Image 1: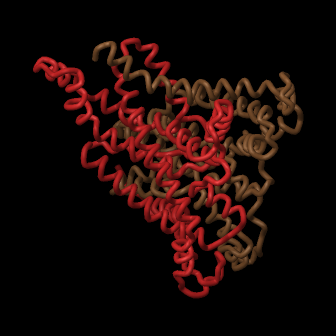
Image 2: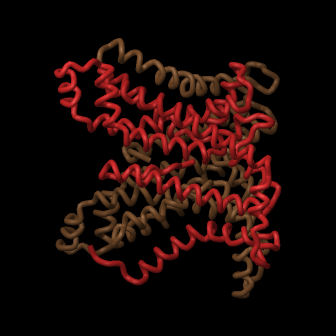
Image 3: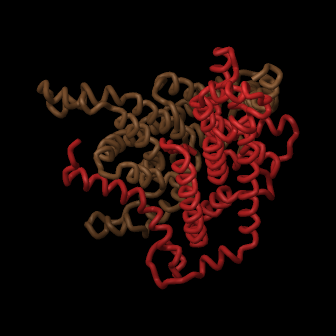
Length: 268
Length: 266
């Protein structure tokens, strides 16, 4: 294929600059002693100290991470078990119906998920707070885990299972010694995706959280509604670094074990 | 796998599907039949077709269509040029990376960038146009939305272009087609699947995101998502909110139906 002309290069560069400008902008002004997102005065770590000293923010961070790890772990278990059940379903029609439902959750806009869960939790009497947020995060992470694990299960040759059975392995052995090790890359990818889904979620949490419980995204939203504060900038720099680490981690997991890298892209 | 074990495995997943997919959607339908006083009625649906709500919904569709169109216009050439770069996987990764950053932080950045003293206004002053009110306008809403959604349009188009067999393009040239004809009759039709999944990934969230309208557009732009959030969390009129949600679900279903076959993996 031909090489790009100069106009093409300029166009690409322009897209890149626009994509990264807001991030650079946020990071740059997080060092501004002036306290505004314009007119840079002097370099300062002041806002970072403020973030680190803010105990309320620390509690919120702890909430966010706890919810993310717990929901990712639980949804990975449900998702893996679900994916194994799905590939073993004999009836194609039932399997397709279940997969459609899985996709409904994936494509549903956040407001719909949030609003319907709010109604659901209110109806069955779950208090809004930690439990409701955790349940909601598990719920919207399960389909992504299924989606990540399913291709691995489908590409696995059935002869592997037959061989294990012939050699006298019980179903449990087949599962623990053959199937699970084989699909581990998919499981890890699913876990990572669930983790980032949860860390990033704003809208669903915003709907199902109650007074006194907040996650980072919800907190940033309420801070941003109050106007500009460079503490948010400092926080966003730190979060961007964590995101980078997660992406690198995910990249390594998915390239080390499989040739094809499928970049999961999130729409939330 | 024997039957007993299979059923045992199906239980937690089936429970999850039932409790968190089927039941909540049914409950939205149920709630939409009650007005704010808890009386069983169809008044919420009647209200939806009243001028205020209906024009709001139409405008929301219009904005979403506009955002999708702009995304497509920028994303297609970007994806096309990306496939021709040397380290395309790396470039693609760099395009996607910003989409992993928290949505709210990116939106928040634009409060500064588009603000009265922000760099955009400074630039406008330098070139002699003078400072303008950019924040809290339709333009800022569409711009920020396009910014947020564009990676989700680039990615599927990129994969579709990657799958395109280059000999087909060469054949078109050999047979005397101009670059434009080649694009219109060969490249675009063969990558339509990618375009469809991109449209799906942009259009549905554009209808429903409410934090961009709240933070960037003030209360000037009201989308279906904003209206649903308003009814559920501010006015506590869950019935009307549910009726609006039903229409959003219908819109989602229609979009998925029109773009069927495009989407495989996000």
